[in-house]
Image (cartoon, rainbow, N blue to C red):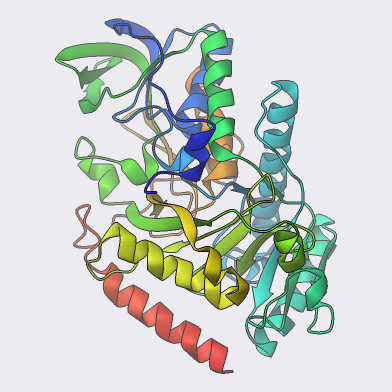
Length: 424
Protein backbone atom coordinates (compact mmCIF):
# COMPACT_ATOMS: atom_id res chain seq x y z
CA UNK A 1 0.00 0.00 0.00
CA UNK A 2 1.59 3.28 -1.14
CA UNK A 3 0.62 5.35 1.90
CA UNK A 4 2.49 5.89 5.16
CA UNK A 5 1.76 3.29 7.81
CA UNK A 6 1.49 6.17 10.29
CA UNK A 7 -1.56 7.58 8.53
CA UNK A 8 -3.68 4.62 9.59
CA UNK A 9 -3.98 6.19 13.04
CA UNK A 10 -3.22 9.85 12.28
CA UNK A 11 -3.88 10.97 8.73
CA UNK A 12 -3.04 14.63 7.93
CA UNK A 13 -6.07 16.89 7.78
CA UNK A 14 -6.63 20.38 6.45
CA UNK A 15 -8.46 21.59 9.52
CA UNK A 16 -11.56 23.78 9.59
CA UNK A 17 -12.31 25.58 6.34
CA UNK A 18 -11.82 29.33 6.61
CA UNK A 19 -10.23 32.22 4.80
CA UNK A 20 -6.89 33.74 5.73
CA UNK A 21 -6.70 37.29 7.02
CA UNK A 22 -5.06 39.91 4.84
CA UNK A 23 -2.81 41.00 7.73
CA UNK A 24 -1.16 39.24 10.64
CA UNK A 25 1.76 39.62 12.98
CA UNK A 26 3.60 36.57 11.64
CA UNK A 27 3.27 34.28 8.65
CA UNK A 28 4.86 30.84 8.47
CA UNK A 29 5.34 28.86 5.26
CA UNK A 30 5.27 25.14 6.00
CA UNK A 31 3.03 23.37 8.53
CA UNK A 32 5.33 20.53 9.54
CA UNK A 33 7.20 20.25 12.84
CA UNK A 34 9.29 23.35 12.14
CA UNK A 35 6.48 25.67 11.15
CA UNK A 36 4.14 24.56 13.94
CA UNK A 37 6.86 24.86 16.59
CA UNK A 38 7.57 28.44 15.47
CA UNK A 39 3.86 29.29 15.35
CA UNK A 40 3.20 27.94 18.85
CA UNK A 41 5.99 30.08 20.33
CA UNK A 42 4.68 33.20 18.58
CA UNK A 43 0.99 32.60 19.35
CA UNK A 44 1.67 31.96 23.03
CA UNK A 45 3.42 35.31 23.13
CA UNK A 46 0.22 36.96 21.91
CA UNK A 47 1.03 37.23 18.21
CA UNK A 48 -1.53 36.73 15.45
CA UNK A 49 -0.05 33.83 13.42
CA UNK A 50 -1.05 32.25 10.11
CA UNK A 51 0.61 29.11 8.70
CA UNK A 52 0.37 28.10 5.04
CA UNK A 53 1.22 24.73 3.48
CA UNK A 54 1.05 23.60 -0.12
CA UNK A 55 0.01 20.11 1.05
CA UNK A 56 -2.16 19.02 3.93
CA UNK A 57 -0.41 20.11 7.16
CA UNK A 58 2.26 17.54 7.98
CA UNK A 59 1.81 15.61 4.74
CA UNK A 60 5.50 16.01 3.96
CA UNK A 61 8.39 14.67 6.01
CA UNK A 62 6.73 15.23 9.40
CA UNK A 63 4.41 12.25 8.92
CA UNK A 64 6.58 10.26 6.50
CA UNK A 65 9.71 9.73 8.59
CA UNK A 66 10.72 6.65 10.58
CA UNK A 67 9.93 8.15 13.98
CA UNK A 68 13.45 7.90 15.45
CA UNK A 69 14.05 10.82 17.83
CA UNK A 70 17.83 10.91 17.66
CA UNK A 71 18.87 14.52 17.06
CA UNK A 72 21.63 12.94 15.04
CA UNK A 73 24.31 14.86 13.14
CA UNK A 74 26.08 13.77 9.97
CA UNK A 75 29.33 14.20 11.88
CA UNK A 76 30.44 11.79 14.58
CA UNK A 77 31.93 13.37 17.70
CA UNK A 78 35.36 12.28 16.45
CA UNK A 79 34.94 14.02 13.08
CA UNK A 80 33.24 17.07 14.62
CA UNK A 81 36.25 17.65 16.89
CA UNK A 82 38.61 17.45 13.89
CA UNK A 83 36.36 19.76 11.85
CA UNK A 84 35.24 22.39 14.37
CA UNK A 85 37.54 21.99 17.35
CA UNK A 86 36.79 20.44 20.74
CA UNK A 87 34.80 23.29 22.29
CA UNK A 88 32.49 23.81 19.31
CA UNK A 89 31.99 20.07 18.77
CA UNK A 90 31.00 19.52 22.39
CA UNK A 91 28.60 22.48 22.18
CA UNK A 92 26.95 20.99 19.06
CA UNK A 93 26.35 17.66 20.74
CA UNK A 94 25.16 19.26 23.97
CA UNK A 95 22.57 21.19 22.03
CA UNK A 96 21.40 17.86 20.66
CA UNK A 97 20.91 16.72 24.26
CA UNK A 98 18.93 19.89 25.01
CA UNK A 99 16.80 19.42 21.89
CA UNK A 100 15.94 15.83 22.79
CA UNK A 101 15.06 16.81 26.36
CA UNK A 102 12.89 19.64 25.04
CA UNK A 103 10.97 17.24 22.80
CA UNK A 104 10.39 14.84 25.70
CA UNK A 105 9.21 17.73 27.90
CA UNK A 106 6.83 18.98 25.19
CA UNK A 107 5.29 15.53 24.81
CA UNK A 108 4.86 15.17 28.58
CA UNK A 109 3.63 18.68 29.39
CA UNK A 110 1.23 18.90 26.43
CA UNK A 111 -0.04 15.33 26.91
CA UNK A 112 0.80 14.34 23.35
CA UNK A 113 -0.06 10.68 22.81
CA UNK A 114 2.59 9.72 20.25
CA UNK A 115 3.90 6.36 21.52
CA UNK A 116 7.10 7.92 22.86
CA UNK A 117 9.45 5.05 23.74
CA UNK A 118 12.92 5.85 25.19
CA UNK A 119 14.35 2.49 24.17
CA UNK A 120 17.69 3.79 22.87
CA UNK A 121 19.45 3.13 19.58
CA UNK A 122 21.94 0.57 18.29
CA UNK A 123 24.27 1.42 15.38
CA UNK A 124 25.75 -1.64 13.70
CA UNK A 125 29.40 -1.88 12.65
CA UNK A 126 29.96 -3.82 9.44
CA UNK A 127 33.66 -4.53 10.02
CA UNK A 128 36.16 -4.66 12.87
CA UNK A 129 37.68 -1.30 11.95
CA UNK A 130 34.31 0.41 12.37
CA UNK A 131 33.92 -1.34 15.72
CA UNK A 132 37.23 0.12 16.90
CA UNK A 133 36.11 3.56 15.72
CA UNK A 134 32.90 3.13 17.72
CA UNK A 135 34.92 2.36 20.83
CA UNK A 136 36.81 5.63 20.41
CA UNK A 137 33.55 7.47 19.75
CA UNK A 138 31.99 6.00 22.90
CA UNK A 139 34.90 7.21 25.01
CA UNK A 140 34.45 10.76 23.67
CA UNK A 141 30.68 10.75 24.22
CA UNK A 142 31.07 9.50 27.78
CA UNK A 143 33.88 11.93 28.60
CA UNK A 144 32.37 15.12 27.20
CA UNK A 145 28.61 14.52 27.39
CA UNK A 146 28.18 12.05 30.23
CA UNK A 147 26.27 9.72 27.90
CA UNK A 148 26.06 6.14 29.07
CA UNK A 149 27.08 4.78 25.67
CA UNK A 150 28.74 1.42 25.20
CA UNK A 151 29.91 -0.91 22.46
CA UNK A 152 28.87 -4.55 22.14
CA UNK A 153 31.17 -6.98 20.37
CA UNK A 154 30.39 -10.12 18.35
CA UNK A 155 29.88 -12.25 21.44
CA UNK A 156 27.20 -9.89 22.82
CA UNK A 157 25.55 -8.95 19.54
CA UNK A 158 22.60 -11.27 20.06
CA UNK A 159 21.50 -9.26 23.10
CA UNK A 160 20.75 -6.37 20.72
CA UNK A 161 20.02 -7.86 17.31
CA UNK A 162 20.00 -11.30 15.70
CA UNK A 163 21.73 -10.91 12.32
CA UNK A 164 24.96 -11.78 10.59
CA UNK A 165 25.30 -8.32 9.02
CA UNK A 166 27.24 -6.72 11.87
CA UNK A 167 30.22 -7.62 14.03
CA UNK A 168 29.02 -5.46 16.91
CA UNK A 169 27.79 -1.93 17.42
CA UNK A 170 27.37 1.18 19.51
CA UNK A 171 24.46 1.48 21.95
CA UNK A 172 23.10 4.82 23.11
CA UNK A 173 20.46 4.62 25.82
CA UNK A 174 19.55 8.34 25.58
CA UNK A 175 17.63 8.18 22.28
CA UNK A 176 13.98 7.36 21.64
CA UNK A 177 11.34 6.38 19.08
CA UNK A 178 7.80 7.65 18.55
CA UNK A 179 4.83 7.77 16.18
CA UNK A 180 5.64 10.77 13.95
CA UNK A 181 2.13 11.42 12.66
CA UNK A 182 0.69 11.35 16.18
CA UNK A 183 3.37 13.85 17.23
CA UNK A 184 2.33 16.13 14.39
CA UNK A 185 -1.35 15.74 15.28
CA UNK A 186 -0.50 16.69 18.86
CA UNK A 187 1.35 19.77 17.65
CA UNK A 188 -1.65 20.74 15.51
CA UNK A 189 -3.86 20.48 18.58
CA UNK A 190 -1.50 22.61 20.67
CA UNK A 191 -1.21 25.17 17.87
CA UNK A 192 -4.99 25.42 17.52
CA UNK A 193 -5.43 25.92 21.27
CA UNK A 194 -2.84 28.71 21.13
CA UNK A 195 -4.84 30.48 18.42
CA UNK A 196 -2.72 29.61 15.37
CA UNK A 197 -4.54 29.57 12.02
CA UNK A 198 -3.28 26.76 9.75
CA UNK A 199 -4.20 26.61 6.06
CA UNK A 200 -3.54 23.37 4.22
CA UNK A 201 -3.43 22.99 0.44
CA UNK A 202 -2.66 26.70 0.27
CA UNK A 203 0.56 27.00 -1.73
CA UNK A 204 2.43 30.28 -1.51
CA UNK A 205 3.46 31.27 -5.04
CA UNK A 206 5.69 34.18 -4.06
CA UNK A 207 6.96 35.99 -0.98
CA UNK A 208 9.18 38.98 -0.50
CA UNK A 209 9.93 41.96 1.70
CA UNK A 210 8.06 45.19 1.05
CA UNK A 211 9.35 47.91 3.36
CA UNK A 212 8.61 47.03 6.98
CA UNK A 213 6.34 44.14 6.00
CA UNK A 214 6.50 40.85 4.15
CA UNK A 215 4.00 39.99 1.47
CA UNK A 216 2.87 36.47 0.48
CA UNK A 217 0.82 35.50 -2.56
CA UNK A 218 -1.56 32.59 -2.00
CA UNK A 219 -4.90 31.67 -3.54
CA UNK A 220 -5.07 34.91 -5.52
CA UNK A 221 -4.65 36.96 -2.36
CA UNK A 222 -1.83 38.97 -0.83
CA UNK A 223 -1.13 38.44 2.86
CA UNK A 224 0.91 41.03 4.73
CA UNK A 225 2.90 40.11 7.86
CA UNK A 226 5.44 41.76 10.13
CA UNK A 227 7.48 38.56 10.44
CA UNK A 228 8.00 35.72 8.00
CA UNK A 229 9.39 32.27 8.79
CA UNK A 230 10.18 29.81 5.99
CA UNK A 231 9.91 26.16 7.10
CA UNK A 232 9.75 24.22 3.84
CA UNK A 233 12.99 22.19 4.09
CA UNK A 234 12.91 19.23 1.64
CA UNK A 235 9.67 20.47 0.07
CA UNK A 236 10.93 23.92 -0.96
CA UNK A 237 9.24 24.96 -4.19
CA UNK A 238 9.87 27.35 -7.05
CA UNK A 239 8.68 30.31 -4.97
CA UNK A 240 12.12 30.41 -3.33
CA UNK A 241 14.84 29.74 -5.92
CA UNK A 242 17.44 31.15 -3.51
CA UNK A 243 16.74 28.45 -0.93
CA UNK A 244 16.39 25.71 -3.54
CA UNK A 245 19.99 26.29 -4.58
CA UNK A 246 21.08 25.53 -1.01
CA UNK A 247 19.06 22.42 -0.13
CA UNK A 248 19.33 19.11 -1.95
CA UNK A 249 16.08 17.10 -1.71
CA UNK A 250 16.96 13.42 -1.32
CA UNK A 251 14.18 10.84 -1.63
CA UNK A 252 13.98 8.31 1.18
CA UNK A 253 11.67 5.28 1.11
CA UNK A 254 10.21 3.33 4.02
CA UNK A 255 8.70 -0.16 4.00
CA UNK A 256 6.73 -1.82 6.81
CA UNK A 257 6.41 -5.60 6.98
CA UNK A 258 3.22 -7.54 7.18
CA UNK A 259 2.07 -8.40 10.69
CA UNK A 260 4.61 -10.80 12.18
CA UNK A 261 4.04 -13.88 14.36
CA UNK A 262 3.95 -13.27 18.09
CA UNK A 263 7.46 -13.19 19.50
CA UNK A 264 9.35 -12.78 16.22
CA UNK A 265 10.09 -9.07 16.72
CA UNK A 266 11.43 -9.73 20.21
CA UNK A 267 13.54 -12.59 18.90
CA UNK A 268 15.17 -10.42 16.24
CA UNK A 269 15.30 -7.16 18.25
CA UNK A 270 15.31 -8.22 21.92
CA UNK A 271 15.28 -4.68 23.33
CA UNK A 272 13.08 -3.15 20.60
CA UNK A 273 15.59 -0.39 20.01
CA UNK A 274 15.80 1.92 17.04
CA UNK A 275 18.55 0.68 14.73
CA UNK A 276 21.03 2.16 12.29
CA UNK A 277 24.29 1.16 10.69
CA UNK A 278 27.65 2.54 9.66
CA UNK A 279 27.05 2.78 5.94
CA UNK A 280 27.30 5.62 3.46
CA UNK A 281 23.89 4.62 2.08
CA UNK A 282 22.33 4.65 5.49
CA UNK A 283 19.55 2.26 6.52
CA UNK A 284 17.52 2.69 9.69
CA UNK A 285 14.99 0.28 11.10
CA UNK A 286 12.86 -0.31 14.18
CA UNK A 287 9.80 -2.14 15.44
CA UNK A 288 6.48 -0.38 15.04
CA UNK A 289 5.16 0.97 18.37
CA UNK A 290 2.85 -2.03 18.86
CA UNK A 291 5.73 -4.48 18.32
CA UNK A 292 3.92 -6.34 15.53
CA UNK A 293 5.93 -5.21 12.51
CA UNK A 294 9.37 -3.92 11.55
CA UNK A 295 10.00 -0.91 9.32
CA UNK A 296 13.11 0.04 7.40
CA UNK A 297 14.01 3.25 5.62
CA UNK A 298 16.72 3.87 3.05
CA UNK A 299 17.46 5.91 -0.07
CA UNK A 300 15.51 5.14 -3.20
CA UNK A 301 17.40 3.84 -6.21
CA UNK A 302 18.58 6.55 -8.59
CA UNK A 303 17.56 4.55 -11.66
CA UNK A 304 14.06 5.26 -12.96
CA UNK A 305 11.75 2.75 -11.30
CA UNK A 306 8.14 2.40 -10.25
CA UNK A 307 7.18 2.83 -6.58
CA UNK A 308 6.61 -0.95 -6.42
CA UNK A 309 10.14 -1.70 -7.66
CA UNK A 310 11.66 0.86 -5.31
CA UNK A 311 9.72 -0.66 -2.41
CA UNK A 312 10.88 -4.16 -3.35
CA UNK A 313 14.48 -2.90 -3.45
CA UNK A 314 14.23 -1.40 0.05
CA UNK A 315 12.48 -4.49 1.41
CA UNK A 316 15.33 -6.61 0.02
CA UNK A 317 17.64 -4.59 2.27
CA UNK A 318 15.51 -5.52 5.28
CA UNK A 319 15.58 -9.21 4.27
CA UNK A 320 19.36 -8.96 3.94
CA UNK A 321 19.46 -8.04 7.63
CA UNK A 322 16.68 -10.43 8.71
CA UNK A 323 16.17 -13.32 6.25
CA UNK A 324 13.32 -14.63 8.45
CA UNK A 325 11.16 -11.67 7.35
CA UNK A 326 11.04 -12.60 3.67
CA UNK A 327 7.86 -14.76 3.84
CA UNK A 328 5.86 -11.94 5.42
CA UNK A 329 6.50 -9.33 2.74
CA UNK A 330 5.53 -5.72 3.29
CA UNK A 331 2.12 -4.13 3.65
CA UNK A 332 3.06 -0.45 3.48
CA UNK A 333 5.59 1.58 1.53
CA UNK A 334 6.00 5.29 0.86
CA UNK A 335 8.63 7.89 0.15
CA UNK A 336 9.43 11.42 1.26
CA UNK A 337 12.08 14.10 0.96
CA UNK A 338 14.88 14.89 3.33
CA UNK A 339 17.03 18.00 2.77
CA UNK A 340 20.81 18.19 2.91
CA UNK A 341 22.78 21.42 2.70
CA UNK A 342 26.33 21.72 1.43
CA UNK A 343 27.72 21.89 4.97
CA UNK A 344 25.51 18.94 6.03
CA UNK A 345 24.34 20.75 9.16
CA UNK A 346 20.91 21.90 10.38
CA UNK A 347 20.70 25.65 10.08
CA UNK A 348 18.86 28.72 11.37
CA UNK A 349 19.61 31.80 9.28
CA UNK A 350 18.18 35.05 7.89
CA UNK A 351 17.92 36.60 4.43
CA UNK A 352 16.29 39.98 3.85
CA UNK A 353 14.67 39.70 7.28
CA UNK A 354 13.09 36.33 6.48
CA UNK A 355 13.92 33.62 9.02
CA UNK A 356 14.78 30.15 7.72
CA UNK A 357 15.16 26.83 9.54
CA UNK A 358 16.18 23.84 7.44
CA UNK A 359 18.75 21.20 6.45
CA UNK A 360 18.03 18.45 8.99
CA UNK A 361 19.78 15.73 6.94
CA UNK A 362 17.22 13.08 7.83
CA UNK A 363 17.09 13.77 11.59
CA UNK A 364 14.19 16.18 11.64
CA UNK A 365 12.08 14.61 14.40
CA UNK A 366 14.26 16.41 16.94
CA UNK A 367 15.94 19.19 14.95
CA UNK A 368 12.86 20.48 13.09
CA UNK A 369 10.91 21.09 16.28
CA UNK A 370 13.91 22.55 18.07
CA UNK A 371 14.99 24.98 15.35
CA UNK A 372 11.38 25.89 14.63
CA UNK A 373 10.97 26.96 18.24
CA UNK A 374 14.18 28.98 18.05
CA UNK A 375 12.93 30.61 14.84
CA UNK A 376 9.80 31.70 16.70
CA UNK A 377 11.91 33.17 19.51
CA UNK A 378 14.07 34.93 16.93
CA UNK A 379 10.99 36.55 15.38
CA UNK A 380 9.77 37.67 18.80
CA UNK A 381 12.97 39.27 20.03
CA UNK A 382 14.79 40.21 16.86
CA UNK A 383 17.91 38.83 18.51
CA UNK A 384 19.70 35.78 17.15
CA UNK A 385 19.15 32.88 19.57
CA UNK A 386 22.03 31.31 21.44
CA UNK A 387 22.32 28.23 19.27
CA UNK A 388 25.23 26.45 17.65
CA UNK A 389 23.07 26.18 14.55
CA UNK A 390 22.32 29.91 14.16
CA UNK A 391 24.66 30.91 11.38
CA UNK A 392 25.02 32.54 8.01
CA UNK A 393 23.05 30.89 5.17
CA UNK A 394 24.54 27.68 3.77
CA UNK A 395 26.51 28.17 0.54
CA UNK A 396 24.79 27.62 -2.78
CA UNK A 397 25.59 24.39 -4.61
CA UNK A 398 27.29 25.08 -7.94
CA UNK A 399 25.20 24.41 -11.06
CA UNK A 400 22.23 23.32 -8.93
CA UNK A 401 18.74 24.79 -9.40
CA UNK A 402 16.59 22.29 -7.50
CA UNK A 403 17.00 19.07 -9.53
CA UNK A 404 19.77 16.92 -7.99
CA UNK A 405 21.32 15.71 -11.26
CA UNK A 406 24.55 14.75 -9.48
CA UNK A 407 23.01 12.29 -7.00
CA UNK A 408 23.31 9.13 -9.13
CA UNK A 409 27.10 9.51 -9.29
CA UNK A 410 27.32 10.13 -5.54
CA UNK A 411 25.08 7.17 -4.75
CA UNK A 412 27.12 4.86 -6.97
CA UNK A 413 30.30 5.99 -5.22
CA UNK A 414 28.73 5.50 -1.78
CA UNK A 415 27.53 2.02 -2.75
CA UNK A 416 31.09 1.13 -3.81
CA UNK A 417 32.41 2.40 -0.48
CA UNK A 418 29.84 0.27 1.40
CA UNK A 419 30.80 -2.85 -0.58
CA UNK A 420 34.46 -2.18 0.15
CA UNK A 421 33.75 -1.75 3.88
CA UNK A 422 31.77 -4.99 4.00
CA UNK A 423 34.64 -6.85 2.34
CA UNK A 424 36.99 -5.72 5.09
